[in-house]
Length: 111
Image 1: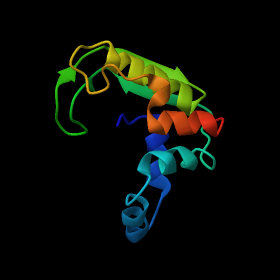
Image 2: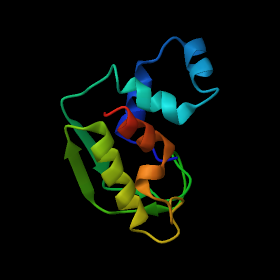
Image 3: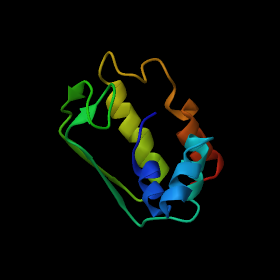
């Protein structure tokens, strides 16, 4: 799973027990659906350093030295995945960006 702007909305889910329940099933789709209620005017993604494996605390680190900005959460996540896919050995190698569940569902929801 890649995490970016779409996953950022997850921080709005509270209290603690709701967060546990939230993670139990269909996480990718639920993260995308949060975009229906949290629509930021702009999203800035810090891609100066990225994990191409593992994450969020450790893994194989690369330094694309990029800052991405968009008014659309789905679009910026698509571009974020493309940044990761530039590096061989990434966990998303050989996968179509639009087939990743979280992004696919966001596109279906027209986010």
